[in-house]
Amino acid sequence: MSARAPCLFLLLGVLLPGTAGPGPNEAELATKTDALINLPRYIEWPEGAFVVPKTPIMIGVYGHSKVHKALLQAAHGKTINGRTIMVRRFYWPQVPNSHVLFIAQSERSRVPWIMKKVEHTSVLTVSEFDDFLTRGGIVRMSMQDQNIRFHVNTAAARDIGLKFSSQFLNVAGQVVGQQ
Image 1 (cartoon, one colour):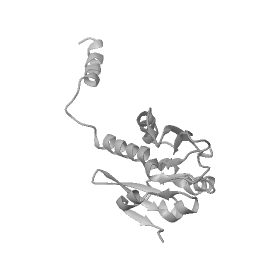
Image 2: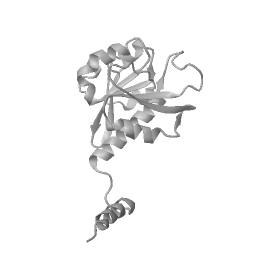
Image 3: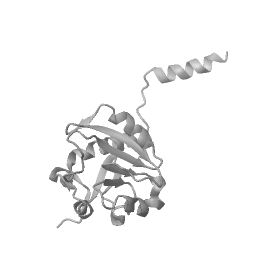
Image 4: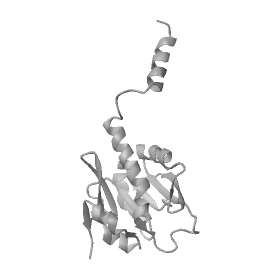
């Protein structure tokens, strides 16, 4: 077999459609990505959160996560409420200038300091840590039976002027901080 044959088989494997669907990690990543892209649909930001009426919605990813690359691809050409979606990655010690901020697992030890950086802003913080809501986070995502579940801290959201739609809160798995 020539040296070109393995390359040809690899190329054919990529180009020809297979019968297997995405693996569990790929499916979970796609679910999380879709959730992060669509989450701003259910949020009302306070006046002044967007500089001009057509200011893009900035979704930030803090730290190392496959979610960043998936978000870049998924957000391309999408709009929410007439606003384009932009994706940006942040690393410690950057100040995350975004509307939605996904804090990756790689930043677990830095969560208190990252939360301090967004303390007086209207940034919707999102992560997957079990204790994220008790650490001041607003939305915790978790996977249950291949579906995304949202756990929401409405008190933390209210403190910075964010409001969730009742439609979103009705499907949330857990809502804490309601009056």
